[in-house]
Length: 216
Picture 1 (cartoon, helix red, strand yellow):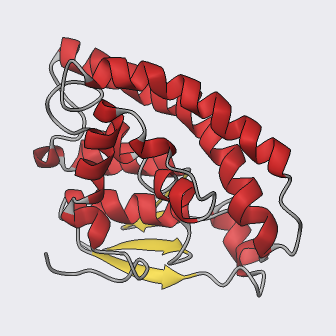
Picture 2 (cartoon, rainbow, N blue to C red):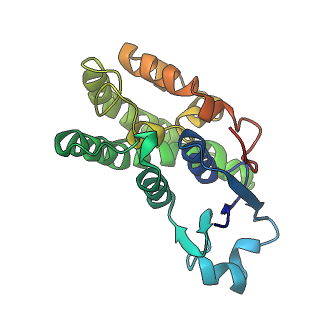
């Protein structure tokens, strides 16, 4: 069987999210760097694989899949030993609930803050501080709910880590490094959970960028 191939930008948040999950599942993979500055993600060859011209996508022995969360779910389902998606109906429902929380209550605000603090400067644009502050304020309110959940158990869906927790990793640290915010450590239970995620070997493995990994 051919080795899984991950096409992306080694420093991008979306690529690192997939790399982190591949590491958690101990899946060997070859990493292929896509140079966005040269427009490699907009070539006809690339668009044939990913019609929206974004990163990343995977090629798993001829099976092409894009959209980061879909890729991560596929990996977790194909390699169930990683236990990142619970199979028990009730535990699975709690996982789906937690995954929805990340997508609806974290990503919109964290993503907006990332765009203002990192995305715009990279494009030579000026950060709108008012917009950044508004995004962080909205996220801070959402994190009150997180703190209430995490006061009851270790992770968002219970006492075992799932994809729902890992989905936060690429974006949350940028709020500290680029938005210069302590938002992830203000609330005690959120802070404990966040520091736990940052200490995982799967996150630490690609601090310098995602790379081909054949052995764990």
